[in-house]
Length: 431
Image 1 (tube, rainbow, N blue to C red):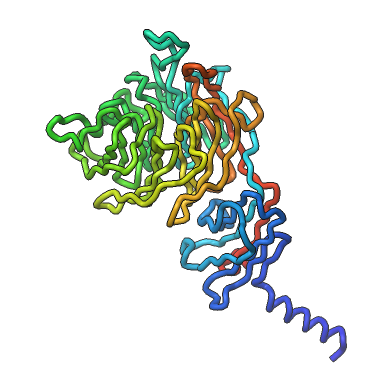
Image 2: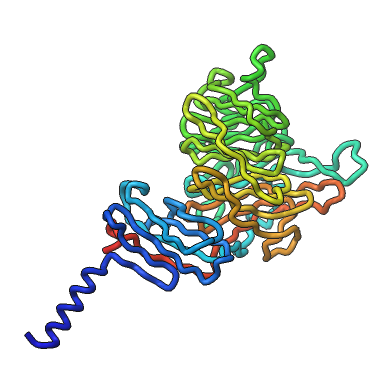
């Protein structure tokens, strides 16, 4: 055999042996010893930076698992097992070093119409929904310049490309006439039905109807644990659940949203901390039984819905505390929440490891700059399942001794100073 043929055979053998090892400047991924998973080694350029290490679907780009979020304290390898991922699909490992929010664009209404008081935003089933709580008038009998919402509240629906979905409601807008002071949050279910808290219960709307289909909850003096008074915040859970905290109280109610009034009551839980959020949204759920709440101590609480009861799991330990956390959003364990203020304006990212809530990073400062991470009255956030986009709404409320909110809706890109992706050594993505 000629020398060139021997060299060619050796090279082919080397490539065949190493075909399941993928390496870049920052990432090395190789099969585990038992071939049932992968070993991932990260070589960060900056150990002090805030980083994200995730498994993403090779086709959609959506995150299916967060391996690590935060600062690396050592260079120990990570492991991922095949059974910890969805049963079907090809996957890649994505690493972003020194993550940050980068302003992309303002989300505008058509015909030069301006946002008045946007208070909630959610990304649901590939569409973006934004709640504008309506016109602001001076607060009666207030010596300061405080304002309160009056008139109509509107819910807008946008396509994934952020153009208005004119098939929703009246050319992209669902207008509501109930008590505007309570219409500051909403929910949308898997069928597209819309849920609004109106102070005493939750209204269920079809976008094509002029009146609500039915209401959930109500008031019964003889059954206070079932009663849903002072409702300004909700989260639509997995069918058929809906989570209803009562503002300025310690009660959380779980209802069957397919049933009318108080017929769907399931159970109540009294959390260890007081849940307070004025009328803004204070709750979110991952749709798999994990429910997260803001609390009056500037932290986040995690509960687990077992199907029979709500169980408290743990509380975050953000330091310094979040100044009035509002409008949280959860995706694959990454929990975003605003620090509304009055004395701050920021976006906080936490990571639910399954054992505790860790602080990953804090982004932005209080301010009004149009193209920067400056916020005044950030009320809610929404993230895409690929963890590449984040929307932030800032309300237009005027509070005593504080400038008014910026009254705007903006899109940010979640980027890293360094980014790298490599295939996982199992599934079609490795071929």
